[in-house]
Length: 328
Image 1: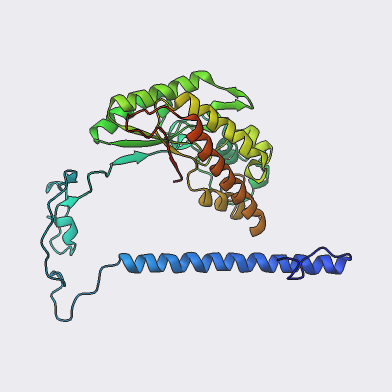
Image 2: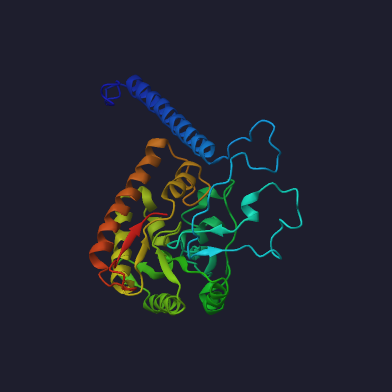
């Protein structure tokens, strides 16, 4: 289609200049179209979620529709504690949903989620660690405004997991989504940190003993520095390196994990890293180059999906589904 639009290669500097101008114009058009599509989609979704306007003449605190017969409540539900609810202290709050019992379907699971770099601490081999400090290979971001919050020890979950597990129990969590740090575990091609793997395995076992379903994310916004040095996800070979990690974990942790998340928000990851330059690798690229990063991430997800189903054959909870795989 580029040839049909006159974007084929032609001899001469003027033609190359014209082709580049057209490519830049194409980038702007694609970006504008993405913006409009996302905006319209969000507007439609919001309008569908918004409550209908009250009927003319109806009091503000009266529902506009007549009440309908309530179905039998499901077994999994929560009742608001009057002592914890602000509804009692704010009688003018017009939200009948808060004043009633909140019901959830029996299959609904309450949980929490974290990312390894945000909570573990001590990940000095991670891309974010170097990016926060403007170290190699991110020297080009030193004089630019980026996201530079220093994680440091974070919440020190690497040392305080047992305390965090007690808090999960106190919250009656039914599931916990955690990520395996690629930078901590994958030291080099073909080389893994086995003591770190043993600790992750213990965490998963303790979660199951506590009745909490572990959900494991395999790519959550960080990578080893040796991967960053080779171009990160702009380099097609990064998918091969990540698939080595995925396959290794499917075999090593499949006995404790039945639910896998391959990647966390790859669109956000690629956009902030390669379009806006606020996250690692801190690049501001043309849309067509950013799209190549998305192609690599999407292809890697497809390959990881197949690898997890092929290699994780252990059914941890006995429900007949040894591996459920998706995106977050």
